Length: 158
Image (tube, rainbow, N blue to C red; front, top):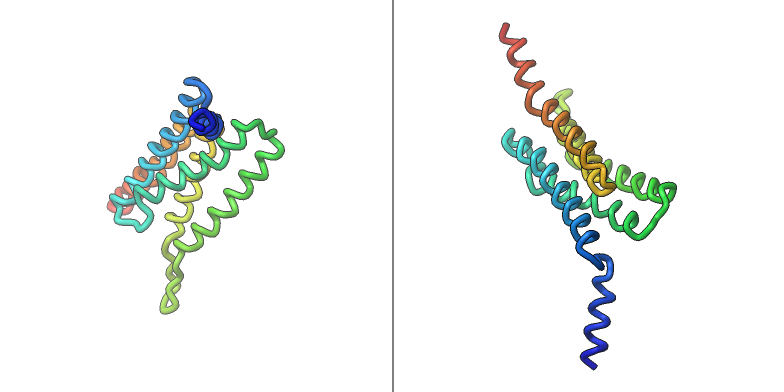
C-alpha cells in the first residue's frame, strides 16, 4: 500500500521531475512576483487601491497561466490563445478599477487599470522565460509611473 502512495505522490509532482525544471519554475514565478511587486509598491506609495499584493498576484497569475502549458509542450499557436485569454480577463479586472464621476467630467483609475494590464504583460514575459524583456519593461513602466509625474510637476512649476 505505501508503495502505491509514494508512487502516486511522485506522479502528482512530476511537473518538476528534476532540479533544472524546478529552478526554471521558481525563477519565472519569483521574478514575476518581484517585478509585479516593484510596480505594486510604487502604486501603493502613491496611495492607489491596487498596490503591492494585487500587482504581485496579477504578475504571478499571468506567468503561471503561460508557464504551465509551455512546460507541458503546448505549441506557440495554442499558447497565443492562452495569452489572448489573459489579456481579455485583465481587461475586465482593469475595468473594475475605473470610476467615472457623474457630477463632473472626471475619470479615475485609468492609470491603475493600465498598470494592472502592464503587470500582466510582464508576468507573461516571465512565464515564457523572457526575463530580460520583463526586466526592461518593468524599468520602463516604473519610469512612466514614478519619473514622468515628477517631470510634469517640475515643468508646471517653471
